Length: 210
Image (tube, rainbow, N blue to C red; front, side, top):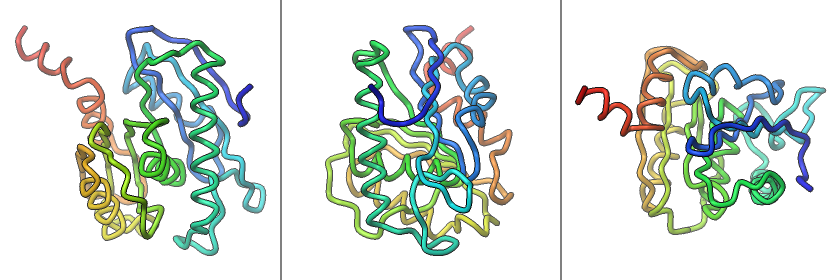
């Protein structure tokens, strides 16, 4: 059985399974509306963050605002990766395409899993993410795709940290699309449109042909 409290919603077999990772204080339902905008027919796998910070659910401990407990990041990233693998077996997902969709703290744990466990997550759309680890291992990420949307005026996920994440991913061979918006710590409409185009690029190609 899967190790994290979660909800699972079945979807079309030919659409990607979306792994929904909420922000601090959120829950499994938070990103469902966003997911439906990105891929309406997709199956949804939405776990709850296992760490409590004064009652607010998170994915890993932090020592202060923007200061992560890096040992816990590694531990929790492996926990989430193992959950993904167990869920593939539990829900009969086989080798179906799986894409992590994360916001804020959820985007940070998705980034950590992408860097540490490419066997579990090879595609991720990250909103308001920052670098989760100072020195990620040199895993081969040549089969990995990552989309990032960051605000130019985000006090919680500074662009310098987001740029470090982009660099770390690219240095390991990942295909990275970096989207910027003029706002802060948020998901924007333009970011969602860009993410949807990244998620299913061939649909855009088809619409331009018709």
